[in-house]
Structures are given as C-alpha cells and as structure tokens.
Image 1 (cartoon, rainbow, N blue to C red):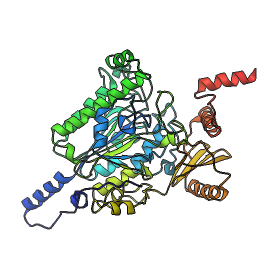
Image 2: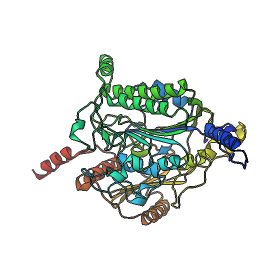
Image 3: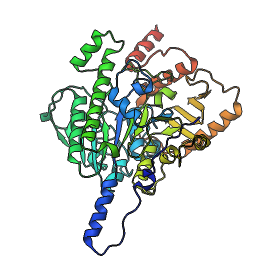
Image 4: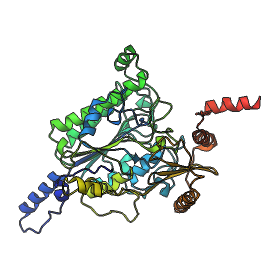
Length: 496
C-alpha cells in the first residue's frame, strides 16, 4: 500500500494570512513580526552523483551516514523519487525552475569554456526557486556547486541568491589548486564574484560556510541551496578518514571516506540549527542530483543503470523531507515523485498561489503527505500519486514512467518494463503489450512536440557512449566503453 504520512494540524494553519487592517502602526508591525516568526527556514541539500544504495537510510551497510540517517528518520523517505535529468546540470536547472528543463532547451550538461556566452545556461526568463523565496522576505544562500550558467547574468547572485560561496562549474579538486590572483574561472572558489583562497578539504569548507550563513540569518527566515560537490569525481578524500577505511579493508575506501565527510558536514548544519533553536521549524529536503555514477564507484542496487542513463538507476534518487514542526516523521512514501515538486511544495509552504505565468511540471507534495486523522482505513483509501506520468530525454534517448510501467526509447529501439515485479528492468515485455507501447509512445511524442530544440548538446562522442550504455542495458550485456578513452581503444580494435 501507499504509505501516507500524517502532518500535524500545524501545516493547515501555518501560513494563513494574518494581515488585517490596523490603525496603529505598532499593531501592524507586531503582526508582521508574528508572521515572520512562523515562516519555516528551508534547506535543499542536493548532493552529487550519489548512489541509490549508498546511505544508511537507503539500506547501505557499507556507507556510514549517521547524521543524514537521523534526519531521514525524523522525516519522510520517498522511495520512488526522481530527478528530471540524468546528469548534473539539467537536473539542477529543472529543480530550480520547477519545470522540465527541456522547456527552455537545457537538456544536456553545459559545454566547456562558456563563461563568456550569455545563452549557455538556464534561461534568464525562468523565475527560480531562489527568486520565489527572495521575493517573499527570505535571505537566500547558495553554497557549493552551481553548474547552470557561468556568464554574469546566469550566476547565482543574478538568479535570486543574496549570497553565493562555491564554484560555477560542475566539479573540481577537493583541495586548493587554483590561485585567486589569476582571476575568475569556473573552478575557482568564489565568494559571490570574488575569487578566494581556502584551506583544507572542500566539503568541510562548504559545510563551515553553510553554518556561517545560518548564523547570519538567525533572526530572519532563510532559504539555502546547499550543493556540495561530494561525492562527484575526482575521487579525493581526507587522508585521516581514508586511512581508517583502508585499515578496515573497506571495499570502496575512497567513496566511503568522501561520504563520511559529506555526512559530517550535514551534521554540522543540523547541529547549528539545533543549537540556535531553528531545527524544529526548518524544512530540509535531501536528494542526489541524478543516479550514482560509474566513475565514483557508487552502488545503485537494486536498480539498473547509472548516471546519464534512462534506466531507473540514472534518475531514481535518495530523497527525504524533514520538518519536525510540520511533518510526523519516521515513515515511507512510495508514490511517484519528482524533484520538480520542490518548487510547487515551496509555494505551498509560503502559502502562495502559483507565482509565474509559466506552467510548472511539479506538484505540491503536502496533500499527499497528510490525513485528517491517523485512521488506517483513511490512509489506505488514499492511493493517488503526485504524478501519473514522468518523462526524460537527452540526445537520442528518451523514457517515460506511467505508473509502474517504464518505456525506454533508444534511437529506433524501444523496450517496456513493469517495475512492480521487475525493478531491475531486465524483462522486456513490449511484445506482449503492443497497445500499451503504442499509447505510451504517443504520449512521449506528444510531450516532445511541446519542447523547443535543445540549445546545445554534449557532442557526438558522448552521444555514442550513451547509446552504447543504453543498448548494453537493454541487451543485459556488459558495456563495451564508458568514456572517450575506452571508445577510442574500442574503435582502434575494430579497425584491425
């Protein structure tokens, strides 16, 4: 059955309008102060390339994540949650816009060397999640990886964030390797637009900065987009933590050490919130930006596929929401959910109607997580999902979820899976269900027709690699090449 979570009656009354006419200015100010005090803080923790089964709360026995697990235990864990892209940049653009990123031509990771290109990034006409909070009286902070535009008008400070500390690109060394005296580049750490030096390990530095921002906003509600580069490659860990896992003969010592550093810094944030009395009324949404990658040795069990692929392992991600004052935690929700829902849920948290003229593809999750009473019969009677359908597309590869059914299309090849009894997408049932395939193909094509042409792509080499990964998955065989170097060697052998 679908597990539905009870919200306290606090949610239904949390953000009712309290603006009343008053002749005395002091009364008006007092009322505004009360409303301000009720607004929850909101933190989106979006980690990088994390495996579906690489956190304790997702069942991992190898990765030790006590702080993250504690947060998850206090909230609602979503088991069928998805990002709107299968690689970093498109997924993040979709989350921050609340719309399929395809609707503004952002289907692939960004090309290299585009800091001087104003059209390479999330369209400036998109009203971001940060704009939403900023325009409703919140301090807004971005910490860590940006990766959705490097030109001046596409950077965080131009997209609704009051403060930004991090890097504009998608990855970099976890240690100091760039000299601020050389000026701005897309991998150097910047404080807003100013290149800065840092000491130590980057994940720790970003965690410390997040704590500083919380201190700065103790008396005003804030929205924080905490986006550490962990656990994206390069595979670099703190020496002291890595030594521990090597001594234990851990099967994945570097990833384990990087994951522990990530967990420590999430713990710093929750400790700061708790110490300042803010944790109770802070919404924390935790997710990965896409499925785990092969380059960092992640584990997506029991899913097939990895980052960049349209199998579940490419876009079904660890996801939970914690809000002690608003959510009764400790439960699981298995309805079909999307990272696109974070935007619409934020509008509901703020007590707002939809704020832009553009249609959003996400839905408010709160009604799916509440019931009037803890009556089990009422809970089991509510079986609807946030989404009946979800879509993905990049290059020549597309897919669609319709309930438990999953259609994957690669060039002119297609396959159909029933995830209810085949979560590993191993048994293609397309031949047994031709009418269903036809109907879903029609739906997928209809969605494609709504979209503009992609504004850039990842090039022919990566397109060929991605097709190979998908065909290998459909054939249940080993992937012959996973990166440009392996492709080059494969083609050389073919010529002999």
